[in-house]
Length: 430
Image (cartoon, rainbow, N blue to C red; front, side, top):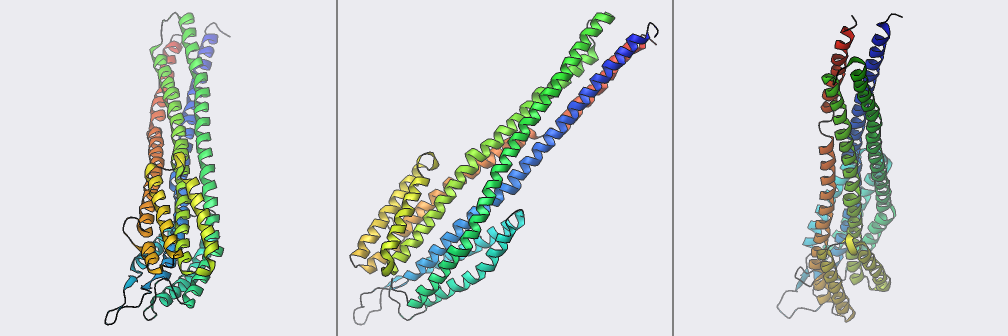
């Protein structure tokens, strides 16, 4: 080997190692950020919307059952009208019918969203579609039977209406809601799994960037010192710029990945998970409303229905306690339960007309108003949790924005700078 061959070989090996590590860092950055973006898309555009649609479907079906139960209460006052006067209409069922129609439209929207989301549970979606037509037929017959009789007495629906309501509710409880629960459980688990994968992959990407970047930085710094000692140069400007490019990608890229991981984790923990608890409270509230109507008209089952309402009230209190609720939810929940106590005291005293007004009235202190106020506050809380999820997703997206071009530009320039830095030294031996 000639006198100049060894230094030239050394320079070429140093340059090759620097190029290899810089290229490896570029690949690591591109792969890590591509994986993070894919994980974020799967969480925000597939898993969470599917879980939200399943939760809303469960709540809407429960509320639909409550509206059909309310239609059992329609009718005129039980007290005979004075001679020459028309009977007093206590409840015409219009509000329950309109709300049921809105609920039914929402059920269709939720099923369409679940079908479009794909994934697991498509068999349950199909089963829901198959059962929903039967449920609509039963509940429609119940409503027609309850509202079409001549001068119906409030709170005393015909036996046929009660029979069809029992069949519709049985189908709801034994077929529709179990399928929705299966969908919801699967979707909720998928959100948790996707959160774990997204956070884990982003953190591993940051670790990979750090490991490869540290190796590249150590090599570039050592090479700079070696050039200074062997070639009596203070600094190699091109290598200095290449080192700065690598350092920028390592520090900024690692920070972006860790920031995205934290934002995605917070979106699920502080947005989606509390929102799922609120959705459970909304379902319990709708079940409680249905229980009240059924309790009023079905005197034979009042003890068991009253016990069921008590269980639902305790469940509501548990779901909305502490940080899971809000001052508005706590206040309106108390007002709703107070209106229920008034309803039961009126019915127990045999004042059926007044009890029916208390159940369906829309002035403050009456059950329908109190339930609406309570459900509105629950929905506001659910919207707040959803906004927190969206905010976390936006933060994660902001952290990842630009990280296809940034490493490509900086490290591509770094590769060129390595070549530019070594060429003058090789030229000295030409």
